[in-house]
Image 1: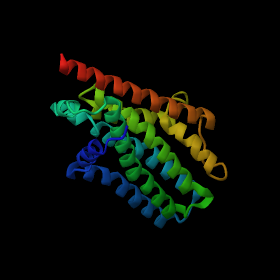
Image 2: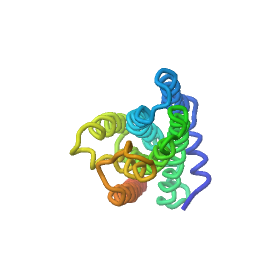
Image 3: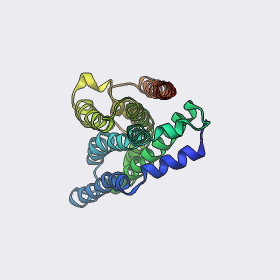
Image 4: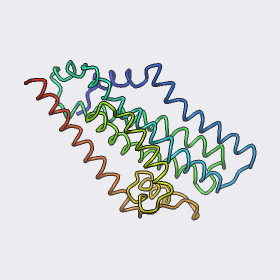
Length: 239
């Protein structure tokens, strides 16, 4: 299922100069904020939760997911170069699966690692907060990458719609509106973080089992549908 050639081309596209600068910007900002907060307030568990939950998990991770997920396939569809890829003797599910793996890897690298570093700066992993949010970032990266990879296959405005989803639904409604929280990837991943962390500072509106099932179900469903959309593109090109 995993095709090294497709992976290499996708990594090259995602880590080009312009996208790389964008991918680095938010992690650098998170670490800078964490260092400043630690300098002003010292090690504080509640502050660590506020920064890691309010900025890292609610804002940084979904935005990086948008960049990686849509960038893994969207530009190729927009400029028509996907036709050359589809003309190769590579199974369509292998293309989607490979691009998903690359998008997940990039999202994890640019979100989970900075989250852990920021957590260590903020409170030295007191109450396992840094580890808990790092694991939450890892599992959220998988689902976000799948969602935004699908978005890249169905619309030319994937980045715009993705940013609206990330900033409005996940960062705003997923954090503040109680009814919307149960339908938020952020809350599903927080259920995992709540299990890992110690104490009662990390909370989620959904249980661990529900969160894990929803993360898996959405990832599988969006990946499958992305494959179907790619298949329809192939048929259209052949016709």
